[in-house]
Every structure is written in structure tokens, then in C-alpha cells.
Image (tube, rainbow over all chains, first blue to last red; front, side, top):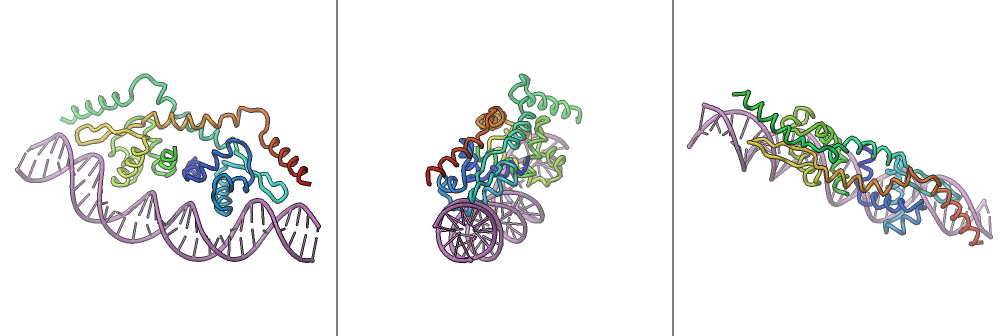
Length: 108
Length: 108
DNA sequence: CTAAAATATTCCTTGATAGGAATATTCCTT
DNA sequence: AAGGAATATTCCTATCAAGGAATATTTTAG
């Protein structure tokens, strides 16, 4: 989880991921679309790959990169544990404040 | 989007967010549960707050922090744009490789 | 009004990381 | 085999962010 998030936390990598959302791309195409230099693109792809966000398919002397669904599923599962936030109708905060207050009264 | 992701990309902040998933906490409680020192916790909370991930409710001389649903909704919306990855049955990669190959043949 | 508790901020130092430049590697073409 | 194209890696430097220590701020208690 942490490696996925930190891989995505960099501007240019986020951009690359959003380009790949439109389908697989070779490194050269990514260089063109991002305006970055080739070595930096390769380096970012390495980080994304290590985080399991992209996969590579070698074809001749090119490398075709594409998104790997597992990483996004993982993110989605993690987000699931927060969905109660906008699905529950009662307010956790109010509850907590009341509880804090009653604790205070006990202290006196 | 980027600020949310980079806020969450730090280990201890991710931990704080997961503690807050169980409900609102004061700074002191977070210090205790994380084992971090108070100033660092305050600093992390600042980053989370700037990213819109947490909100604060002052009560006496304490501050009660809680998760702010909007940030998670935003993340969820962003993830939505990738859901096709595990919902589509055809394979983008295969399509792309075929396309690459036919382009190559034209070049000859 | 003063002291103490809870929290935030500032300053400093250090470690991680991104970009630049150069170079290595791999595969194709001839 | 040699050269060139596509991509990856290495080394260096500069920037940024995290932790430590000290201090400031706010609020309550007495």
C-alpha cells in the first residue's frame, strides 16, 4: 500500500499513469507525451514497476508498458475501509465530543 | 489529487489516518498510539489537514482530529477512471501489440 | 494573575529522491 | 560483424521533507 501511494505521489509518475490509462505505450511514446527525457521516464517507470503499478511487455527493442490492475484493486480495497465515512448517517465526531465531555465531568 | 497522494505516501501519516479510521482522536491520543513525539504528530496533522484529509475541532485546549470524507471521495472518483481495468474482458495490451506489429509491416 | 497542560511552530541537520549527463545494454538491420 | 535505435543504468548534485530540540501559543485550573 505504502509503495503504491509513494509511487503515485510524484507529479510526473502520476502523469505517466494517467497517460497509460488510455492504453499501453512504449517508452518512446511516453517520452514524447510527457516532455521528459528518456532516462527520467525509464527511471519513473522503474519505480512504478517496482510498486506493481505497471507491467512491461518487451517487443523487439522496445518495451510496451501498461497498467497492472492488481495495484488499483489494492488501492480500491484500502479505500473500501473508508467508505463508511460517506455512508454512515450518524456523526462519529459528535459522539466523540460527548464522550470527551463526560470523561471530563468524571475527572472533577 | 497529488496533494492527497503525497500526504498519504508517508508511513507515519498513513498510520495516523488508519488510526483515525476508528474515530476522532485528540493529538495526545495520536501521540500515544503512534509512539511519535508530539511535535512530529502535529506536523503530520498539518500536512494531512492541508491536503484536506483531516479536519480539526478545537475543544478547550485540545484539538480533536477526524477524517474528512471529501478527500476520500476524491480518491474514489479518481480510482473510478481506472475501474475499466478489471471490468473489461478484452485485453488492451493485445490490441496494442497487434497495432504495433501492423505499423511495423507498413514500414517495410 | 500565574502555573500547568495541550498543541503548534521554528530552526537545524540529515537522508531520500528527482533530474542531468554520460554510458551501458539489447535488438534489429544491413 | 557493425552501426544504429530504443531503453536502462550509473554517478553526481541539488532540492525537499522528516525528525530532534527548543520555544511559542492557547486554554484551563487555582
